[in-house]
Amino acid sequence: MDLRDIRTFLAVADARSFLKAADQLFISRQAISKTIRNLENELEVELFVRNQRGAMLTPAGIFLYSKASTLVAEFDKLKTDTMNVNRSYRPIIRVSMTQGVYSHFADALFGYGERYRNELELRINSCLETETGTLLADRKAEAVLSFTRPAGSIGVVTELLTSRIVFLIHKDNPLLKETPKPKFSDLAALPMLLYTAGTDRPVWWYDFPRKQDLPCSDLQYLFALLEQDRGIVPIPEISVPSYLDFAVAVKAPKNVMPVSVFCTTLQKDHYSLVTYTQLEALQRDLFSQDR
Image (cartoon, rainbow, N blue to C red):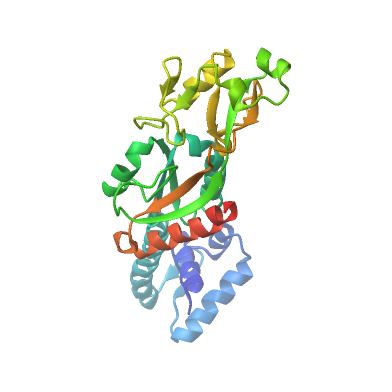
């Protein structure tokens, strides 16, 4: 006797007809009759009396019906509850990225989250460099990607990749026509549009802003000024979005060192085992390819 036999028995009892039960279960009347006959043989009792009014339950059938109804209802509830627990137990991985890092990693992270949506819920946000340590300390992110290491021993820091610095200059700027491969000395007279990422000074720029330069935490605003040919933007190569078709990238001079991108997480014991396992898999499967 298995659950399928019990469901068939209940269907016949509710319909009071072998034929109606067969229609409801989309199987033949012969299959219904065989199942009930096998069930009666196994239990060594008669469950139905067949007469002109249909199939009526015997006393043994009435007893089995009361127990079987409860059994099937409990099983269905158990199945539903287990499925709901499985769905609700997906760990939430919150990854915050500074704006300059976002353009490089966002698409890959969104793709990863979609690919493994049955195993984890991946939430992706942008932030400022100065917020990274607070986000981790306040448990508002499981991982942060940034150009700087959070101050102090906040957690585990992994260097993901290095990126050289480039100058973005408007493609119609006269300087490009006069000097096909301009050097920094050629660009020095132009205003610098310096991305600060929320810090007091540009994260990777070695010189303090001059009077004509514009430090700003909003990279998109700086790109808008660049589109108006209002200056040049020194940023890491990985921060250059694909839609900037109005700009040309010029290599920075040798004395401008490349920058690193870091992934910072808290210590392992700050996470549940499931969350840490998923976070470790994300770092291995996604970030390691960029080293």
